[in-house]
Structures are given as structure tokens and as C-alpha cells.
Amino acid sequence: QSVLTQPPSVSGAPGQRVSISCTGSSSNIGADYDVHWYQHLPGTAPKLLIYSNNKRPSGVPDRFSGSKSGTSASLAFAGLQAADEADYYCQSYDNDLGLWVFGGGTKVTVL
Amino acid sequence: QLQLQESGPGLVKPSETLSLTCTVSGVSVNNSSYFWGWIRQPPGKGLEWIGNIYYSGDPYDNPSFKNRVTMSIDTARNQFSLRLTSVTAADTAVYFCVRVSLVLTGFNWFDPWGHGTHVTVSS
Image (cartoon, rainbow over all chains, first blue to last red; front, side):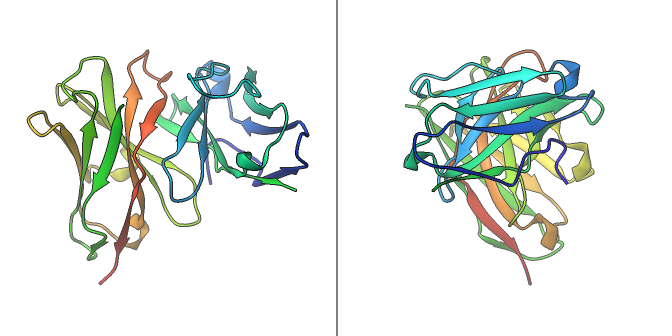
């Protein structure tokens, strides 16, 4: 059971806007800790997609965006592409547990 | 370009010690601007943070591992290492090494990641 909750899967047609939610609690996201997002294609190195809630590392397309409100965060895809098929994980910190925590991951499928 | 590469045995017997090394290229591990860390993913499960280590060797590990974790830095080889003692089948996972951003504790992100190395615990 992951500390942060994500939907197991999300799907959409090419060009469609989709989003992934990441729900935490008052001891992590709600405690104002930042949320970061990673993209992972199995067999490859996970890649940082969004850091500090809404910042994109150099090289990440601007069709990816992140937001945070209250005890939740969200990763949005402005126009889904076939190359976006991957697993996506959110990450934050939990001050009750004293450790960095992840969501269970969301598999994105392009129809 | 900064790259991280994990190495170590792919099979470890129960009750023995799992030892992994991460070789860093493109930046010195002896750099006060970063932490270095380990994360794992058991089969069919999510990601689990194991621990971080600072260039000075100061570690910070996940309490759920109940003191089974030891981390170290070898500045001469530009590597950092993980030792996990008394392993069981539950320690079977893909293990990733990462660089940890040096910001206020709790606001850190992990970038980049190694490709990961699969470790199976079995007799």
C-alpha cells in the first residue's frame, strides 16, 4: 500500500488531454512538501518529468505540466502522444514517517 | 553527461548480504552539492526509498529496513555502495541508484536514475 495514491491506469486517444492524480495526506503533500513526477518505461532508467510541483527540467516538453493543491497533486498531458505510453510515479516526503514516499504508479495507455 | 550505473550479483541467498555499487560518471561523488541514494521496486509493486548518503559519508536511511542498511562512498573510484543484510525473498527487487537534489530536506527530487539492477533472493 503506497503512501501516495494514484489511479492504476489512465488511457486516452492521441491528442487528448489527460491527467493523473496523486492523493496524499496532511503529513506529506498537505504539509506543503513538494511533489515530483517521474516517467518510467520498463527496462530503462526512470526520468524526472516535473520537479517542485510544476517545474520542468530542461528537455521536457511543455505539454507536460504539474500542479498541487491541498493534499493532492496532478500531472497533465496537454496532447497525448504514443511516446507517452509509460508508467508515471509521483513522489513527496512524509514527515510522520520521516522518509521519501512514492505513489503506486499509473500506467498510461494511448488508444 | 552525468550517468549512474548499478552493478552487483543478481542472485543472493536468504539470510546473506546484498551488496550493490553505483558507478558515477560525469560528476564527482565528492561534491557537496548533492546527496546520492538508493530506491528499489519489488516485482509488481511501487517504488520504495531505501536511503541517501552525503558526500561526507553521512547516511540517512529508511527506518522500515530496521538497521539492515549500510551505505558508503568511495571517492577514489567515484562510486557509492549499498549493503543490505539478512535478506529475504521480500528483498527481491530492481534496485536503482540516484542522485538526490540538495535542497531543504523533504523537498528533494531524484535525478538522474541508473537503469536499475535486478536482484533475486533465493536459495
